[in-house]
Image (tube, rainbow, N blue to C red; front, top):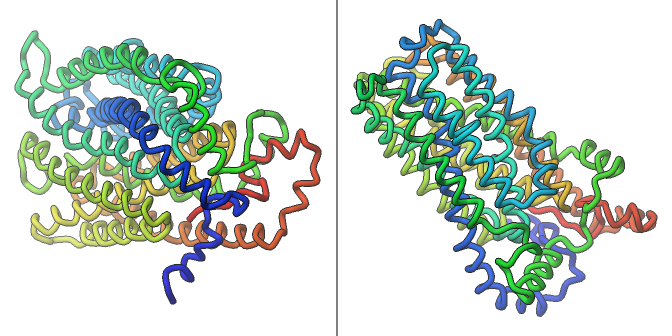
Length: 491
């Protein structure tokens, strides 16, 4: 069976066959300077902010092994509570935040969030965490941090999807996502440096992590307000002809599939979309894997016999390797316009890694190798899952709400990781690794369902089985989103 047959390339076409190949070629040729301009202006800013966001999130894992729990007189299970509170706030505020962002300029919204997580919420929340005296104070800081992070996490992906066509988005998202990977590497090195400040100004080393990161985040947020572009048709970032070209390219990608009104009919279409729930299942278990790495990797490495500072440093090559793998898979995935098989590659890496970690008594170098597989599996699969899902939604409000829903529902996986990675199981975490392994298998199964479901729907549309929707009143027909018969799903 050849590649075209296996992936049903005609059904996988990203646009309706009504668009001529010559017009597509012209758009592609003319768009290169435009894409370069957008890339240079947007990607470095978003990647830097994402790096800061993840550093501010994972710094609690580094602070934990530098004495956070002892300083605040925390009991067993308290660390998991702080993680759960952050995740709860993320889940509650993702959808309202994206709907709000639709009405506000992205530069003010995303930059303001960064200032908040640097000043009132995340920068003073992160900054303020360095001065908390009690466990209750830490809980308050982590909850408000989760509010701001949830708004940013779902917002920046929605923002990117308004500038790029579907098969231009994966590699660019992964460049931004590398900020998250670098955060894992840099946070360990950063924590090591901050540990050397232990005792300065009468503060423990773990407090300096939050203080310095908070100050950096505040400054970055203020700068973002002035340099990040707004929506494509707003502001002076793009000139008149560039705006027209970008609008034509995006319309070519989705055809008549629009959702520019958020009314009862639109909400019904969104909430009845099986794709949201299937992708949420995949993201749920992917998030469980990711949070287990983010919050517990330093502790696992310390359990291999290394000192706290050595464990921080040994996280760096794990994240650097994961970054290289995720960039390679993104470029290939966009190049051949295919997602499904690469998700399965990430699943395979995860199964190998967590299976090895479950085996007792293995030499530390074998366990360390298994962590590489586990990290590579997560950092390959999760960005692909997000973009695969986003590729299959059309319309402003569909993308805004659906993106927030899957990231919100998916982040519930973090609740599991904070409870199955129990203190009494450290550093082997047999229960945690076992649950995460089972979750990786579920990702693979749900991915197969997603793939065949999308392919079946494309075939129905190619046979004309959805043409009856064109008989709807114009008011309803123009707000169908990806339910429009001309839209083709990608996989």
